[in-house]
Length: 151
Image 1: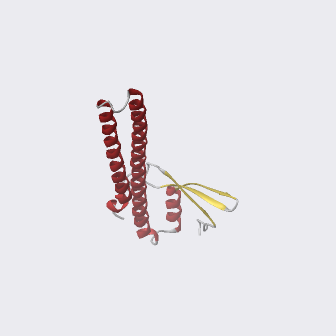
Image 2 (image 1 turned 120 degrees about the horizontal axis):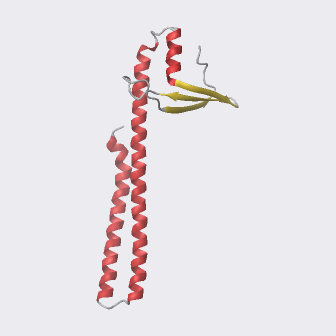
């Protein structure tokens, strides 16, 4: 999946927010013009501007949420790509490993296995890069009926 394809929903949301912010700015201009031309009193002007300010703050909050969701999606995609690269590299040589080497590999990537109510929880440690296997970043894999790891 390309980064542009993943950004498309966010682009549409940002476009809609941009239009909404322009509308709020136009409404602020109209309210100010009405006040300046004395078609609206000070109390009404303040009331209307407070409503518009509140609406603008909601739109700003929505913008921050979109930014956060996009960052989370990008981080998830990067992590998945890293995991796929790691698995691909490991799978290349997996068939040529001896039983002891396979156990050593499992000990490298699996930190802890717990089984509760028939569900196995595997806490894994996937190396962030192939050059430095000592950095550990736990990943969680859960699933019922996982196969035996020693066979």
